[in-house]
Amino acid sequence: MNTHSSVPAGLLPERAFKPNRAFPCPRRDAEDRVVLIPGGWLLAEIALVALLLLGGCATEPRRARIKTSAPAGDVVELNLLAMPVALNLNGLRGSDGFAVKVYVSAAGSAKAVPLKSGTLEILMFDGVLNKTSNPKPKPLHTWSFPAAELSPFAVESTLGTGYNFTLPWGKDVPQQNRITVAARYVSPKGETLYSAASPITVVSH
Image (tube, rainbow, N blue to C red; front, side, top):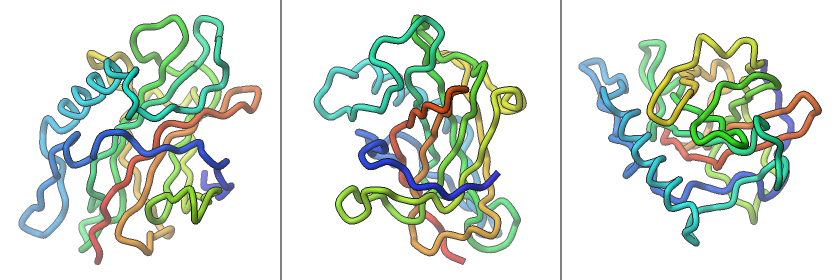
């Protein structure tokens, strides 16, 4: 599903850590395709653990929450990890997609949990978000995954259940040399919750 609704201002803060320090840079193969380095997600998860442990630091952005005090089991936070460089998925020269992992946090749970209801969405924006010049950015492409369709993407780690997505952007080709991605949860009642945003470098054709 592809939608293009704008995002409310101030709901997509950039991550406090630099992407190139949180992840090893993907390498290129003999055909100049960007490929993932084994162990990349492991280092990303280590960085996320450190980020969560330092949650009280002034540099950690505040994420939008559905409720300040939620019943046990309610989704209260999303964490998105993104590979810092876009991928070549179709074998042709240049980037045509990206890879992210999303963790869902629920009230009363120390680890990330499987999503039981609602919809998880991945938003892709053309360029780097700027709250001043573009306070209500419009996604270039949105991927929507109802909770019932998430099991093929689920993986288990020390952080709990996560969701791995490798997403081609198809005809919605970015025009700038960087994109910004974020996750959004839409509850059955229509309430929305956003992760922090992560920039990704795009390799031109």
